[in-house]
Image (tube, rainbow, N blue to C red; front, side, top):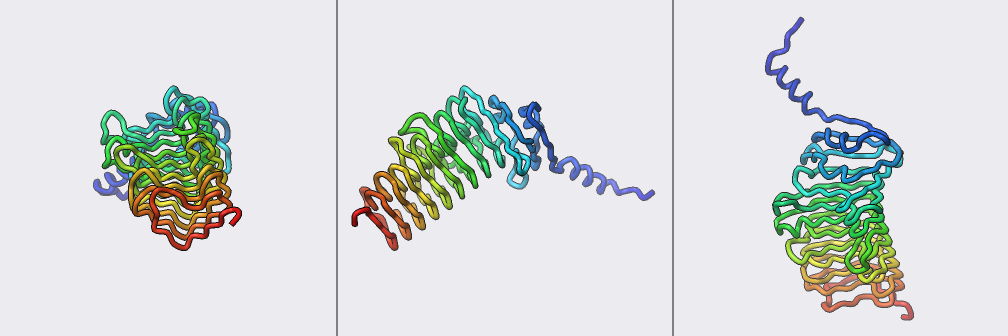
Length: 319
């Protein structure tokens, strides 16, 4: 029998040890224990059913830039996670819990005191979670924010790189001014092809009083039904080089707003219709607003500062 050289045996052992693993659990299994066993590159599949989760995700391991950790519904099956917490339903607050993907999960945050999912820093302002990806996720009924990503408030150098893709974020919040569907107080996040509806404050709220909220992108999404005191479909409330494009914003108090400081923000190729007060509002210097369609809003473009505007179709009722 041919013997493998020692070097080849070492390579074989190392590659076997680092190989990604796939595991499947069902309702009644211990979710927290299954999560604790994950390693970079692993996938945990959940079978159809409802899973109780009392802060069960908070201490799960994360992945790496080349080997994400994934928690997913079995394809074609409906999985509901009933979150319960005296704080946040899912709380990621260290770099050790980064590069994590949630795919196909329905998060019921009715019994969560604060945010449904929070992506933030911990005891150190430079140790924070990032690169969290939500795809095909539903999140609803959180008492405050649906998703809060605020690592940029901890330290201006912190970047988010979080993604919300093909998801539905709805019916979150209690306070009509302060509670939003998605609240980004960090940079380099993406919302893509997502439905954001009927949240108590704003739909998307990009803003930080200190730190950074720059280069965030909201695109290809449908935003409607935000009618609280904030009530804006997409609010780029601070930061530099944020973008909102190819969105449909309707049935909110206001459609899309840029304000509260920052420059180089862009709003383009959006359709904004049937909002209660106005289509577009700009209070910042250096904003570009182009190729938008405003239809059946009481006011078209308003605000404190004239933007760089071109090729916008403004249809105001009665004109």
